[in-house]
Length: 184
Length: 348
Image (cartoon, rainbow over all chains, first blue to last red; front, side, top):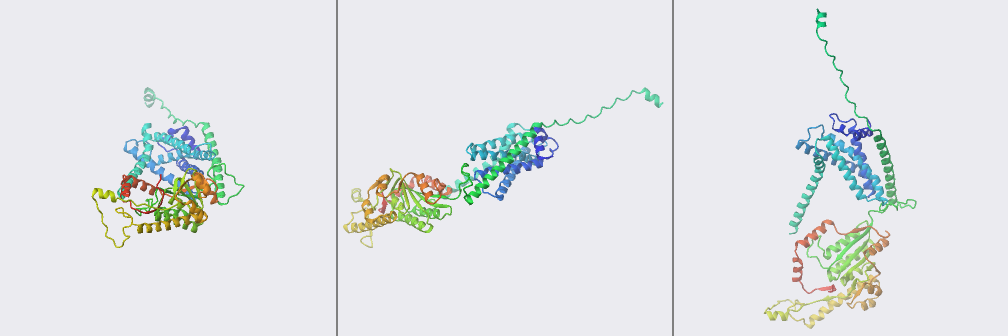
């Protein structure tokens, strides 16, 4: 089954994602989604001159995307497990691959970046819309895999971001206290 | 019997045939078409973006006339080369510490050297908004500019804000181009040595100060007694020498005869426009015009990239330092005020 057919199945019959048996071709489609998403994101960032050129630069973006999503899928599954919502067929691996399919949305960034450079559209706004669409898609996917409400799915999707933000701000507060101590 | 038995017994009900599992609903035919169309669009936009980025990269390496990517803002511009901007704000004095976020003359001189040494900085703009300061501190910055210019051959441009008088102008005189607002206050070419005399006040409150000294001039400039004519002569000689250094610096920097500079250097202040008429300023304009002029002198064209001098951490430290001192720094400075030789204008 080609990745396109898998995507078609997931769009037309999303309940198949939560079936006992993993949808055929999900692994291939998920990884291809990460690759296409990373390529879209990379081209968008290149158009905005935010990343250096070259294959290594692309590989860094790709690796970052894979690592971040691997971490996010793990944290979300852990959250579901801790709150008793992981009894269904959903697993961290399937969630990771499903997130890969949602990353196909990042391909939209390429035309958005193009429109931004041609002064038809704001790149920042385009990126914001992409992030909103991605979160919406991920909430839907989480709900297909785990028997949870919309709010809980949204909380689960936001949780890793919130965790990272909390760690960042803790570091910042510690840094400021350290600077104050250094000066005083 | 068997037959009988079998005939008497009721016939077993026919087993229902197992129903086949319900077939999954067939995929909507439209989805595949949409997905294919989106994939094709993605491929096309990817190809276009890739070609554009490649063209921009190659144009950066070898500028060619047949590659026109000017419609796409920002892609063709080099993200690296630019004009360095160093801010010189407030009274110029030797820093009270060696902390890198202090804004003393050592730190400003260091920033100027570092900025000029940057490979991507093709010209340096000094954004001056200062009434000058102590002679030594001003000359430290001045010599840093002169040395950086000689070593790197990069153009230096001075831009005047609200005030750039006395020591502020001394620093600017080392630059290749001086840009000022028509209303900027500048000039005040001269030296000052101010001494307060609290003798009368101290007598009134019954306070007496005595100095035990190794030489008769050791407490020269003391606020507790009247200055002697001999001391006045000595100080005047110092002032004259510092004044001569100032005039020489302006004459060399502005390529003006000494006599003409001396005629302008009686301590008076000028507006930017008056200074331009007198030849002390080259161009009237704002910071953007100074940056544009720097870009043109450096061959980068108008509106070049501006590279700031301050590191974010140092800015943060400087901000915290000033906030955490709760104004005690200013009080301490005022309390420690002592006579000093200054290229400074005392107006606001």
